[in-house]
Length: 495
Ligand SMILES: Nc1ncnc2c1ncn2[C@@H]1O[C@H](COP(=O)(O)OP(=O)(O)OP(=O)(O)O)[C@@H](O)[C@H]1O
Ligand SMILES: [Mg+2]
Image 1 (cartoon, protein in one colour):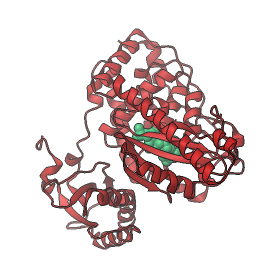
Image 2 (cartoon, rainbow, N blue to C red):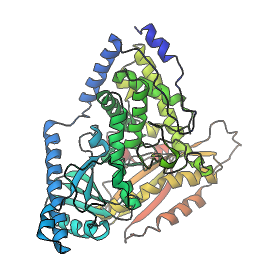
Image 3 (cartoon, protein in one colour):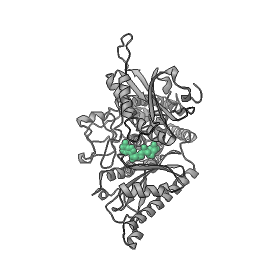
Image 4 (cartoon, protein in one colour):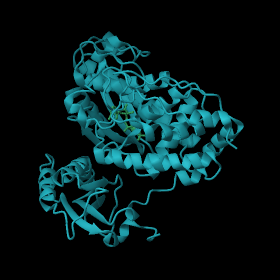
């Protein structure tokens, strides 16, 4: 049975931000009914059985890896201090601290997820040489470290590696202090004075995570709901920042907004309200968790170029940016379809006509379209493939945009954020797929076909301009029909 209070509240339209840089206000709502609590317990059981929570051993290992990383950066900073010729006292006092951010900091990481870390060091230890050369070489010599990959020219420069098999993203920020205190307060705005833009960006992840945890009314409910929605998004093929869907921070902000609106709700209600709210949200109205002064915005939501911000989800710490700038009209369309699916199932669950398992049924991408593009990527070895694949994956959004533009929006693309590997190939290989469909409602003339060969050639040329291209790095883009999808895509059979 559904309580009358519940029906009354759920039939109310969600409030949507109308004021510039304003936030949505809490919708007062009665607390959970017995049925809501029961549904929440069932949801948690489902998530536990699905394996989204890591074991005690895995959690301990992560803590140990973080402790080791903390020691390594301290040793490194002391070494640099000595090389720079500072006094023995300075060498003794020299310090660096590690902060975590991302899903680990929020307490919503799944087994095998990366740990996003930020190292804060003193003013005289720089990123260009000290971090990307001295610390890099230090790490390269360690047996525990594998797959070390420096990315110094990224928007947020990062060193990626595995430490005893755990993926680490390590950022570096040098602050205007000679000695970094062990209990440094990352929310202190004065840390942002006199530092370069990359440092501001590097500090931002930690400040955003802390803000989110401060702004949600009930952290445990927020965590369960976010774990649930991230798992759902992966099952439904809409979890991926790089492909133009949403990544960890975007899902966190969307869920945090729902938690703010329904402060008394338990996770099952929050999941239901999530789908209700975002199926009705008037994009591109921005989602934002707190009031933001105009000068805190790192971009303009209303700027005429802002039309490219299809689904603005604004981070809550200076400089507040749209965290989902990769979303395009086509990926927004795909996500809205998925939100509608989620909304329908949750309504049925509320009426006891469906169960949680149905919500998480994997999306059948290869049954959803008749035509696809297959993007095959090969390289001489797995290391080359990792870098090459990353580059191609980051350009798939461009392919989608180019096709939709060149066909005046009549051909719609759905880039799928999963890679498939043909293990029978001699060289290292992976493939991505893009679903193709005519825009619905388009009047089709007999025999009308789209010729996108020119667009694909242009895309391939752009891909081949990769700065770090090596012999053996190749890409092939082919049009395939559903029945031509290669069998390695279905390792368990065609279902
Ligand atoms: N588009 C973005 N805009 C702003 N911050 C971002 C963006 N992408 C990543 N970040 C920052 O980097 C952090 C780590 O990114 P990551 O993609 O690992 O997300 P995550 O929340 O850790 O999820 P996952 O469980 O997938 O690792 C984010 O939490 C956020 O602070
Ligand atoms: Mg992460």
